[in-house]
Length: 74
Image (cartoon, rainbow, N blue to C red; front, side, top):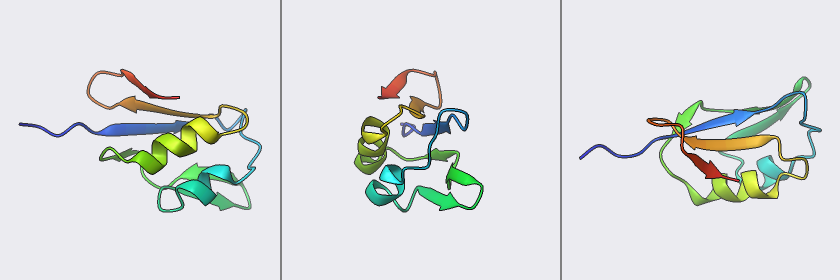
């Protein structure tokens, strides 16, 4: 049986680099001089990533099922 994978997208036009995602899920997000970025395009399901997407103050983070595009969060 194949394990689900998730895809993280971060809308750079919306992101204000508040740092909530890096504080919540630092192993998956990084704040740089050029803004915030996900450290991986795809990952195994992870509750911290859900919390980061749901906690983003401007809704810049989306998490979808990599196989079929079903929205996982927010």
